[in-house]
Amino acid sequence: MDELFDLSKKPIDGGFGNIPEGTLLKEANKVPLFMTELPEEENDTLAALQSLLYDGTPEEVAENFKNQGNECFKAGKTKYQDAIAFYSKALDTNCKDKTIIEACLTNRAAVNLELQNYRKVLTDCAKALKINPRNVKALFRSAKALYMLDKIDQALDCCNLGLEIEPKNKYFQLEKQKCIRQKEFLDKKKREREERARQELERKKVLEKAIKERNIQTETTSDAPDSPNSVYLDAETQQLVWPVFLLYPEYKESDFIAQFNEEHTFLDHLEMVFEHRAPWDIEGKYTPKNVDIYFESASQAFGAKPTLIKVGRKIPLKEVLSHRKYVVRNGIPNFIILPKNAPFTENFLRKYK
Image (tube, rainbow, N blue to C red):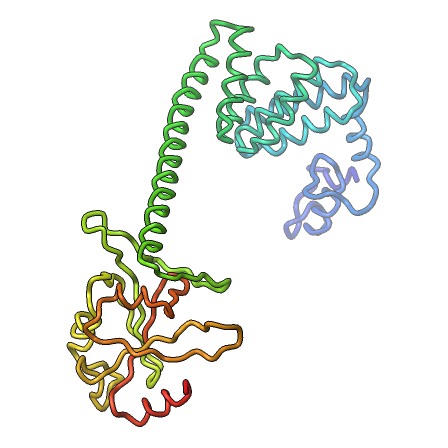
């Protein structure tokens, strides 16, 4: 081995003496000082160096690991995980000195606070406070972690406990003020949510009452689709405004009317819908005066076959929805539109006879 590092020999072909460079690096990697990776084979020198880390009493070993953790923490973000590893090693040494254990727990909590591992912070701080209930560092770090988890009341409790121990501690004072502001903000948001919920509940009650007063039957099925549109009661006119589907079974097409006032007639909307010929209406059959409107009646008995009921174009929506055989399913009335005197219409109507 000595000849590998005999600097009196001149390098030949990039190596020392007659030793190729590859061999030199391979041999150097066996020396712990120059190792770039852990060896697969046992290395007595490395094992001896590693054993030095655990040389001494558990308290001395724990103190050593704690100090190394402190150095890594001071070194910055790139060494935070190493710091946690050293503090964890210190806590695994069976050390009986509670002061060292307490310090390692609060220090590891400090690192995890920087890493935003807030629940781990609380776990370590709780253990430290069990050892020493007057540990202001553990209380302060608990307060900061609880704040970030939106547990503001508990964070305030930690601040108050800290201020009982150190009344003039400016860090606790600032953290407490921050918690108070956040609590006021969250309380305001909560009141706003509750008020919105109250208003929504009241709106639903008023809406249900209006529907009931009109004798409109409704039904919600288990497979009801989500819809951004729903019936509402116009605050100014006190009239119901419904979303409505117009179905064209001949072409398997449909139109959606987002706001169909209950006092409006079908003709009012058909004139707008058919103002321009639909791309699928090749023959131009679908015009306001050349179509009939139907709805499928609700079955009056189990297993009974539904029927189609014709609706006049000039009848307001309100009258149709109040019909004893009409049921609004899943909040959206729908009506079938068929062209007059068309073969498809005759065949379609025959299915309901």
